[in-house]
Length: 349
Ligand SMILES: *[C@@H]1O[C@H](CO)[C@@H](O)[C@H](O)[C@H]1NC(C)=O
Ligand SMILES: *[C@@H]1O[C@H](CO)[C@@H](O)[C@H](O)[C@H]1NC(C)=O
Ligand SMILES: *[C@@H]1O[C@H](CO)[C@@H](O)[C@H](O)[C@H]1NC(C)=O
Ligand SMILES: *[C@@H]1O[C@H](CO)[C@@H](O)[C@H](O)[C@H]1NC(C)=O
Ligand SMILES: *[C@@H]1O[C@H](CO)[C@@H](O)[C@H](O)[C@H]1NC(C)=O
Image (tube, rainbow, N blue to C red; front, side, top):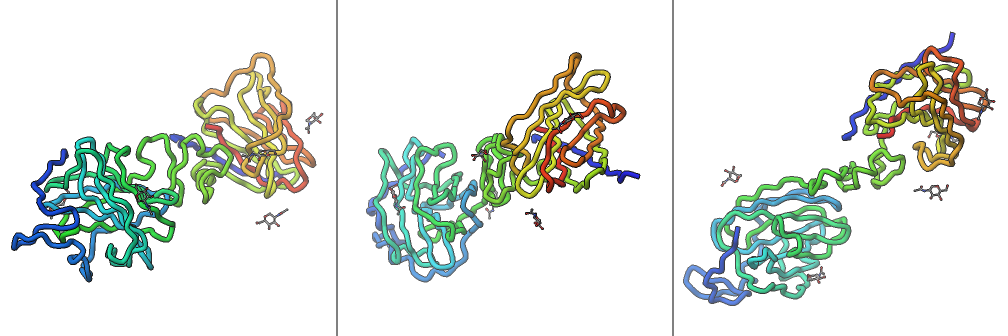
């Protein structure tokens, strides 16, 4: 008796307007409680306090809500176990552009005196922050920390960063208590993105397209793509139950070895059960990027309607054969290599 195997291909495709404070001290100083302008750098040593922080790996983005209770300047520090790079934001201009300076190679306290200072970037009309609620976005791109006022990406501040710098910390320069909340917004800029397992983003069109676009291949994992997989031997007939919806397009049945697949793309059938299909060979291990074979389009064919589709799949000596349950005389077939034993079934959308 032929072994009986059930595979179900279920698919879930979606798949503060700033104001200028009267600042009579220059930008490197602040007014102390006694009223003098005091060099800011003096305030910077050994604070040792803990600061609001969040992991920010390469490819990730967070929204950072900051409540400033008094006039202060905000340090966005991207730190690793050996150093921090900083975007120190003094304020904004009315167009939402950041007034900032960057530092690289600071120590792990984020003390800017230990780092290398970049140029001051002071956009037209810039003013220091005033107390209030601000929303920023911080993104760790491939080689940079980029910070902007939410909604104003064109006014971003940036500093170079490497993957080892992977923790974002916020610090008010004058030590003002800040209420900070972080919200992961990786891939959130629009819903047309897929979030890879490592946190990075690829276009939703790359999800389950048969090519590994995420560095970790998570856009093609069998779980995410609802690809049931089984191992079949020569002669074995496997019953495949597909919960089909028209939006899924064709159903691809592939027989693969470790590196390549042959694929039958099933589109529909005639009322009598003759399959409408396209055969492909030389596909990659995910069943994509194939060499075209033949198309069979019987007269009277229709796309598969929504509903359960029951297929019989047989691995024969040198071919993969598929027919509709109950119609064993109308077989779709494609040549397969001797080592191809992994059966993969997946809807195309
Ligand atoms: C510092 O910021 C400036 C101005 O945006 C930028 O051109 C420069 O590359 C940055 N320096 C580093 C080391 O990231
Ligand atoms: C901090 O902000 C959150 C969100 O706005 C708020 O719920 C919380 O009460 C604030 N905490 C303090 C200490 O202000
Ligand atoms: C295919 O992969 C399996 C498991 O990784 C391995 O045991 C097998 O030797 C590979 N076969 C070929 C033909 O490379
Ligand atoms: C698709 O296949 C061709 C030829 O086999 C190969 O050159 C190409 O790199 C493949 N494309 C991708 C994206 O894997
Ligand atoms: C498909 O089946 C037909 C009829 O049995 C056979 O003539 C043909 O060689 C098969 N094609 C492949 C690619 O195995």
